[in-house]
Image: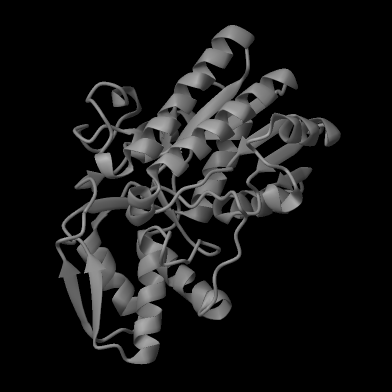
Amino acid sequence: MNNIRFGVLGGTGFLGGHVTERLQTMGLPTFSASRRTNVDARKFADVVGWIMENDLTHVINLAAECGGIGLNQRAPADLWLASMQINATVLDAARYCNLQKLTLIGTACSYAALAPTPFKEDDLMYFGFPEYTNSAYGVAKLATYFGARAYRDQYGLNSIYLVPVNLYGPYDHFNPDTSHVIAALIERFVQAEADNTPVVVVWGTGKATREFLYAADAADGIIHATMEYNDKELVNLGSGSEVSIRDLTTLIADLTGYKGEIVWDSSKPDGQMRRCLDTTRATERLGWTAQTDLRTGLAATIDWYKNNKRGQNVRRSDLHYAGTV
C-alpha cells in the first residue's frame, strides 16, 4: 500500500465525493479530478496529464452523466454519447499510462428488461435488450464492460467492472429535472411539508420495485474491490433489500413529516417493474456486504438535505455519478 496513489475521476460529484472522502480518511494518497478541476474525462490529453502529473497507480472512474427516467426520456442521445466518450477515453488513457489498476462503474440499467430477478452477473447478455426507458445509457455502459475486457485481453490492462444498484445518500444531486427517485422524493416531500401542500403527485403506479444502496456503503465496496479484486468478471454491489416505489414513497413521507395525500399519476412510466441485484459474488469474492438499512440511510439523507441543501441546488461537478434509475 505504501506505493499506491489513488485517482478519483469525477471525484467532486455525488459518489465520487464519498469515495474521495473515504480514501482520505484512510490516510491514502488521493487525487480527485473533474471538469471543476479542469480535467475533462472526454479529453485524452486531460486524463493522461492528470495521471502522469500525479504519478497515479490506481484510478477509480466515477465520471458520468446520468439521471432519472425523466432525463433518460429527454436526452437519451446525450447520455449515451457522454458515457461512450468518457469510458473509451479513460480506458485508452489507462492503457497509455500503464496504469496498475482501473476501476470502472456500470449500471443495473444494462441488465435486460426480461432478465430474471435478482440480476446475476452471468445473466448480463442472455435475456435480450435493456428496459427501453433507460436503454441508451444502459447499452453505453454495457459497451464499457466489454471494452474493459478487450483492453485486458489485448494490452493486459488490469481493470475491474462494478455494478452498483440505485444509489442515495448525503451529497446526492437534488434537482427535480434530473434527480433519481429518492433525491426527487425527498426534495418534494420536504418542501410539501414546509408549505403544507395538501397533495403530492408521484409518477407511475408505485408498483415497480427497486433496490437501493447507501452511497457510503457503495464507496466502501468500490474501494475494497479496487484494493483486492483483479478478475475480469463484473461484480454487483447492492443492499440485498427490495422495496416497492409505493412503500418507499410512504416511508419518505413519514420520515419528512408529510401528512397530506399522495396521488399516483399512472400516465407516467414506472420503468422496469423489478430491478434488484444478486450480490452473492460480492460477498464471496470481495468479502463485502452493505451495512446501512434503508430507513437509517433515508433518515440520514433527509437530515443532511434539511441541514445543507434545502431550497438550493446541490453542489455537483459537471461530470457526476448519481446512481441508476
